[in-house]
Image 1: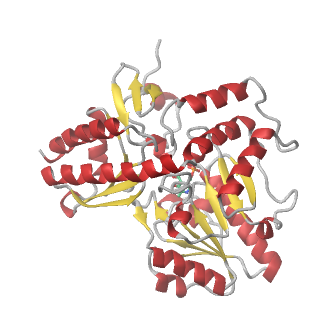
Image 2 (image 1 turned 180 degrees about the vertical axis):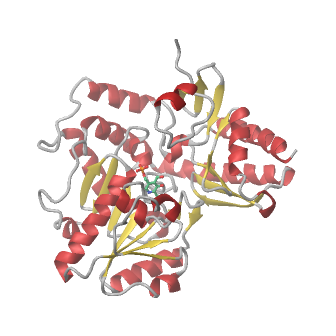
Image 3 (image 1 turned 60 degrees about the horizontal axis):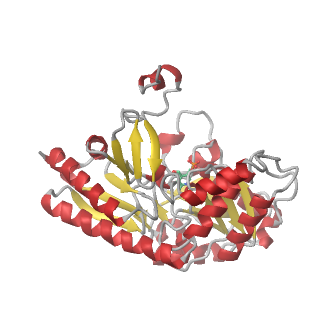
Length: 400
Ligand code: PLP
């Protein structure tokens, strides 16, 4: 007997509320459910499936590695991990890479490294972590507390200490908090979960300067913005502001779980053997797939395609909005796009998601007021066009 959506309620911890249909197969930017219904996927598994579903290069990398070596732990190193680390180092500011399995773990490593390095250099008092309000950095207790959304971190008892929050895109708000006891400042170049809100270049530049002034490390959380989504390999390259530590995950593995923390040799030396780790970090299967993702994405033509497709989305959304005015703003960068609901429809992004699914379109929200698009970086232009037609039908029903 086939398992259906109701089995979720029977067997799974109720911390998610998945859609009514169950996807069983995907190819490119199309997905099919248990009933054979077809969907266009503009959600990309929450900005993860950088090359869509079952991309031939990734299937090849995974199956070849599956026949060779699955796992050895960090008691041994392995070739796919070394190859991926080399690619990341050659393409970024970083000299060193730490692999883990998720965005939260990459940020956990980044925050622990920043505190450790600051404390070892300046003393125990230099441990303050500054983070932006309405940010999202993962769900471990440290990262969820650093994320400036109490609704996610409240209710679990005493929180990790030494964390304070400033306003995104507001340098004065950071100036009021930062001092010589600040170990690090963590920022998303575009707030993803918080509403697809891009930082201004002046803000990121100013944060960099304040960090330098106070010997604080600058961490860019590029879990959502990274690996081509902005139109550059990482969004910091788009802004021209270089962090000290960078976290990556999501698109890095194209759907295979992997995270990475990137940093310089000078900072990395503070994580000596035994100070941090994870059993699966640098797993050969994950690194083989991520290496294949990297090879496809780190190509000027693909990255230029991300920018061209951004324009297709923006133009298409503006056209839809002229017919059914529900959005006050379309914002974002590359293929991370947010359509902000106007006052009259505030809080109703979920309704649009549900109607879109009924019309055969998978989309996301970023908070209750923003409809989010995070499709494959190589989504076909024809799929963008057809998906927007389906969104148009959903919006007609939404306003109707
Ligand atoms: N950081 C950012 C900016 C994210 O958007 C997310 C996930 O949405 C995370 C961290 C957490 O990543 P993960 O869910 O892989 O732990």
